[in-house]
Amino acid sequence: QVQLVESGGGLVQPGGSLRLSCAASGSIFSIYAMAWYRQAPGKQRELVATITSGGSINYKHSVKGRFTISRDNAKNTVYLQMNSLKPEDTAVYYCNTDVFDGSLRRNDYWGQGTQVTVSS
Image (tube, rainbow, N blue to C red):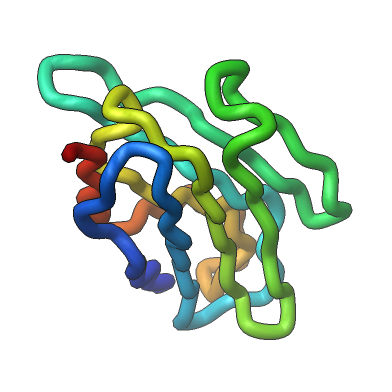
């Protein structure tokens, strides 16, 4: 079993910054892609950014140039640096990982979510 623990959310004014972290622990043999999703009230969950084990990165168009995804493979941790935040970035942010774990299969795991609120 694998657990994901997120941190770093909070309340920030428009134009401000936050850094989210998501640490994976448990019976992990290998982590493939790591990603951040978000879900705003009344909306579907959407993909924000992904990073593969090889370092390939993709972003949702609306966050390009403002958000940066990175990972520390030694710590099994993925980060999301969010700059120039806008009210429309307000959402619960979830991390997601594709893991080859102790079950000897690849499984998909989700974090518990962390609230990001951008408001003056």
